[in-house]
Length: 365
Image (tube, rainbow, N blue to C red; front, side):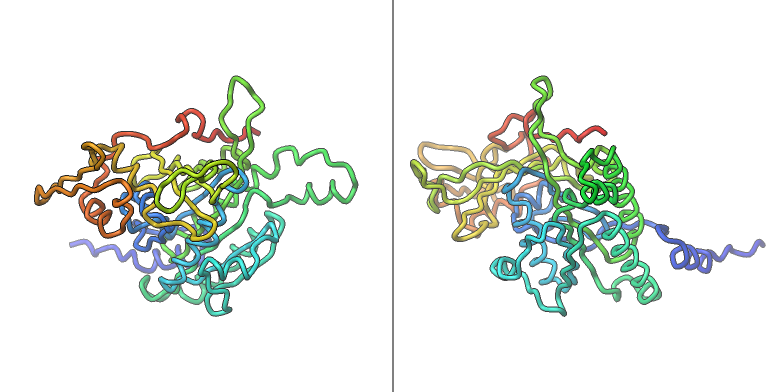
C-alpha cells in the first residue's frame, strides 16, 4: 500500500518563506461594521457585518461625501472594539487626534499607530515590512491566536510617485504618465495576496472627480481600472445636503444639518452588487446606525403603506406592526424586520440618483 503523502512540511515552507502565498481557503471569519446596519447588509448580506478582514475595501467618492467619517471613524472604532489593532496611514495630513477622538477612536499607542506618508513606494514598504515581521513572529501560531491588524489608508488617491516629486522639484509638472495607476494596482494586488489567511485587512478611501465628457457623465475614480479590479470591495459615495431634522421634518433655506451620503456597493462577492442606500450624517449627532433602513425596507416591499401608517407583517408569526413613519425610527422596531430580512427581499435599487449617474467608471490610463 502506498504511503500517504505528507503535505504539512511543504505547506509550512510555502506560507513562511514565500511572500504572497497562502494555502487552503480563506473565507473571512472577522467582519468590521461600517456603523450603518443598512450598508453592512449591502456589503456582506448581514446587518451586523461590514467589511471583511483579509481583504482590501475601497470607499470612493467626492470630497465631503463621508468617506473618512466611515473609514477612519466608524470602521476604526469598531475594529478597536473587537480587539483589532489599527495602523492608520494619513496621506493628507488631515486626521487630527481631536477629530478622531470625537468619533470615538482610541488614539492610544496600544490601540493605534498613526503614520504620515505621501508616496506609494513608502506605503508599500511600510505594509510589506509589517506583514513580513508579522509572519516571522506569528505564523506558527494557530489562526485564532494571531493578533488582528487593520490598515487604514486615508486617502490612497493622494499618494505620490517619485515622478511627481521630481517634477515638483524641477518646477515642470507634466504628470506621471500613468505610473501612479500601475503602482496602485501592483500595491493593492500584492496586499490582497499577502494578507491571505493572516488576520490582516485594509480599508482605504479614494477620490472621484466629475467627468468632463458630456457623452460619458459618470464620475471617475482616480487610480485607474486595475486598482479597482484588484480591490475586494468597492463602495461608491455621492454627497447631498441633509435638510431634515431628527424627526424627519424638512428644513428650509440655508438650514443644512449635515450630509446625506448615497452609498452604492459597486463590487462585492458577499451580497448582490449595485444596491445602494442613503445614509444621513448630521453634524451634531453623527450617523444613526439605522439611517436608511426605512427606505430600504419600504422600497423592497416589506414595509407597506396603509393610510398614514406603514405596516410590517412578520414572516415568522404573521403578527402585524403598524406605525407612523417617524415611529419607525427606532432600533428595536427595526430589529424585528432585520431579523427576518434576506437578500431575496432586495428587489430594487435604493437611491435618489439614477443608477447611470452613480456607478463609478474608472479613469482610463
